[in-house]
Image 1 (cartoon, rainbow over the protein chains, first blue to last red):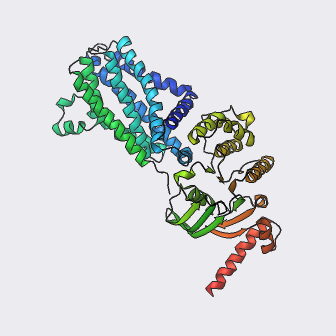
Image 2: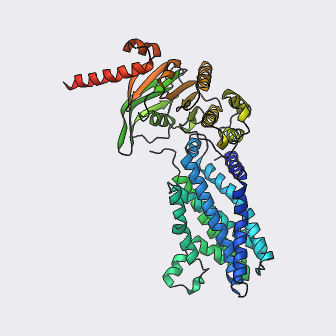
Image 3: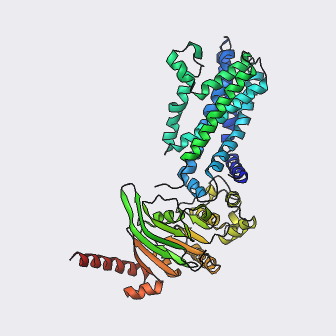
Length: 244
Length: 247
């Protein structure tokens, strides 16, 4: 692994995205618009304060998953990945380059979404906003790494889009947005404990309500980070220099 | 490193793609410092052979030695340049940005970027997005990336496809210049006329090397005057040979 090659890859991906301003705008603005829509929809009820924190996890997570899986799949399909793997770049350099590039975008996206939710939509945050931002960011990075991993198992754009309902929707359903996790049937509750998004939503709720101590939130962040690192390692194992 | 040895040596190569057996014990040798043409119709296995030499093709068995190391050896990644048939270059970057990225991956000197842009005649398009270039310009940009770091061996899969005759002649003269600098080139093509520009020719059909000759040697051996006729004569001869063995 060489930091220079990782950074060169990150810079290359960010330059590619800069040439596509429409994607940049959509990436940065859409989560905030959706959160604004939620706040408006529930404006006469106390619901937004309950589900608002979870929204900060959901939208960046889903969008980063989609955008990462499609852009890496595109690189596989166009042959540039195969070309790169004939060059002196390690598989980890490549995966980390992608993680960092989309991580930078995730920071911007999460910052805008958090600022919009708190200052425009009036989401009540009892604990620190910095901590909220940190959790939202960890979540967007998790979406990026899962997207990288998913693209390894997809051969076409159609397949990779199908991975969203297959891998992401169950996490949304069981994550505690529709029904608090404590009220779920026991089997589903224990299953949801194995899904990274559940922990992200738990952490965001804890920050919003200041209901748990820092150790609890730190523990949840560690679980999210473990899933992200696991996805990066699995992703670099599944990259093959030789193909049939 | 034994510099007098062949640049590429292949023995008993078996390759399967899906259920199709592409190579059944193929063997060949490419001398160092030569410009070698790999000619044959589309689908005969040229690209698969090149992929195997670069080390991105799964092989069933056989040995491929490239510049003294087994194909795909990490040490070869700086010493072998490769272009695929489709231009493998980022559409949403400019030519110069693409080359800048590949240069930093290779650790090649910065001055290489201007050199390869000039060698591939892309000076006027260096600041253009690759996606806005024509097919021929894109494949030259892809070639430029392969020239970064001045590799000892170049494996070029159909680099002249879709180019107008003037550009084709220019590219072949670039290949000759590179060879004079000591680079070994293996260049595939399905255009038989390009044969005459090479030092040696490998004629390939359905995964079999029909001939490994100098262009003149090939014409003499088959008593023909064009590479196309020589190819046809070899196929006819090959069929006679086979039926003779069966009897």
